[in-house]
Length: 216
Image (tube, rainbow, N blue to C red):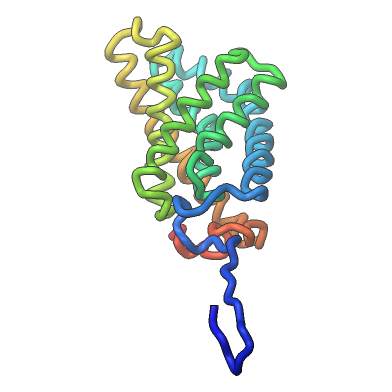
């Protein structure tokens, strides 16, 4: 607050500004809406990939157990995109879980266990953004988030879905394939999609749209 020629002027701060670190900002209505829209859109992608990817997974795994993990990355995309676009704590988990719920609601071969998988996968990506305090969103960060989502998927299946009963060779191969697939099909693809959306102006209400240079 300041005075000029006896007239009091009040300086205000635009609380919708997204240039400050995400950890200092609360969720806005637009963030929630976009997280929901992203989750639904990615859930539809999941639904389509459930059949194509599921068949590829079975074929690859029959040839070499564990290699099927190379196609899993598509199912990890939600966490990476949510983190890169919204840049708020919890965004990676929220978008991945919404996508998993949509996939389960439409119908897939795994039923509601899909939601548990989404939670683990989203948490993997979330931990990378959290470790960097939601300040960096470059390609290496996206690759790491995708790879970490793959690790989350591995832990989920190892702890809750019987993979611990399988051989050490299978689990090692499967983990390696999940990391590679997550980095490329979720991390790289998620980063490219974010860059493309930012270029269209669709993300102008987000830091990911107004400061897209920090994706480099």
